[in-house]
Image (cartoon, rainbow, N blue to C red; front, side, top):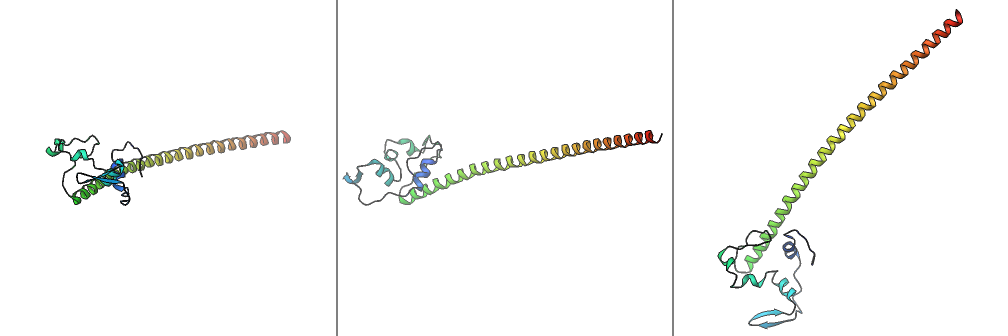
Length: 165
């Protein structure tokens, strides 16, 4: 998992939720007003579980009013404070993503099943048509054989009459 790009709106969040947390030891960091500040911003984002500090800033009045407008197509996030609420929202997001994925997968499987039924019907129609043509060819061939046999019998009768007569 990592720097993969996808147009699926849940991919980045699923990747973030399913990726393993980075190693905590040996990180280069310093203190700034009582908070840890990391030299590498990716480490900070991974450690913060991908949450953006801008979302927590007081200038973001939309989320405080509950009028959050996410362009990623996800439902608005409910704001709770504490470690357990972040885990709960992460699990809820994961569950929603899995639910959407299963719905899409189910639609694909139903479509595939319908196509297989149509193909089976077409195969049976083709087989029926082939058997009918085979039967017609056999009937014509038998009729030709009968004509040839009758023609041979008539020639034999005519030649037998010529010999005796």
